[in-house]
Length: 243
Image (cartoon, rainbow, N blue to C red; front, top):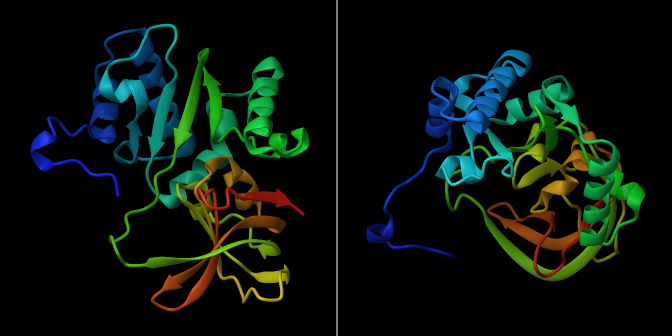
């Protein structure tokens, strides 16, 4: 795993502390926009200030006026669903050339048709607020390190799976969703219990649920011996596409 020595750490930047600082005392036009955005998230989505932080260049205070965007970090699984529901009230969804550029880039990056690229966009990931592009980031809820061990089988598999909709954990990173039933899978693949996403652009499709075609790395999760498909790994890149 990537690591750094304790003595090499100069300062630990906390997104929620920096977010509070910007919200209370913005120092320039970009921080003023970020402060107003945080207030919108609080009021419109009903999210507590303690569950909101800032990332990227705003966190490190090395942003460039007129060029940098805003990264807003939202903590908590239920809060991710609130942003999904209220994003269009908080800011403007991408449209016109901005949306075309986003869809074209995503389609090329993942090698999917443009219509699938369009399905991968949702305002909960990116909006425009006061003329500034804003990205929402949803870290996974705290888990105890080592509580699960993923054993890679080395198999890249594809399956048609039914996933219950509106699982808030599918909006976080990594995204997780439990499986309702397997409709079609290779004969040597046992029942799949979960899908995990390391490629967040597929999150809106997974969150909407229904019947999906999912490709990825087959893993065995211990303890318990459950099977899951991991999307976005080095071994099997993978995808989540409406079936």
